[in-house]
Structure formats: C-alpha cells, structure tokens
Length: 74
Image (cartoon, rainbow, N blue to C red; front, side, top):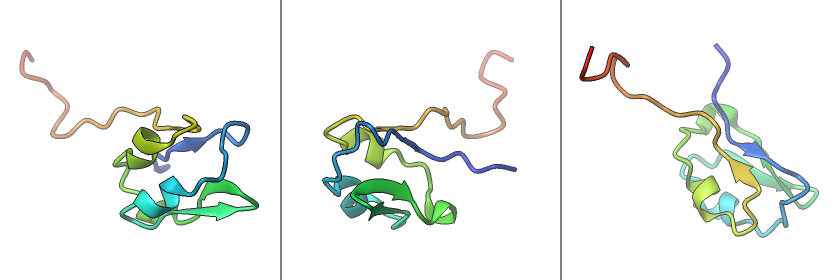
C-alpha cells in the first residue's frame, strides 16, 4: 500500500522552513531550499505543514477517515 503523503509545489515553496519546524514526525527537510518529505514513514498526515505553510505550497489531498468507514446512516 502506498503512503498518503503531503504534496509540495516546488514553484510555490519559498524555503521558509516552517514545515520543517512544525512537523511532529520530523518527516520534512529543506533540500536545495525547498521542502521535501524525506522520511515518509514518519509522516502521520497531521496536515500541520499544509495549515501553516505561508505560501500554500503544501497540500494534503487525501481525506483520512477513521473507523470502519461505514458512516452513521449505513
């Protein structure tokens, strides 16, 4: 199974490092002045990087559903 990971838009990333400082799993690093998910196994998809990126360069495109996914009305 492929990991759900945040996506970084290199064109928007300004290399401020906020995502690196805020990532609780230390999954993000700056390489050549751009954010990169360097330890994908440490990413818990909390979306802090997306929420706090001042240039909106990081997206978390997947919705995480907790539980069995059946919903209340099934």
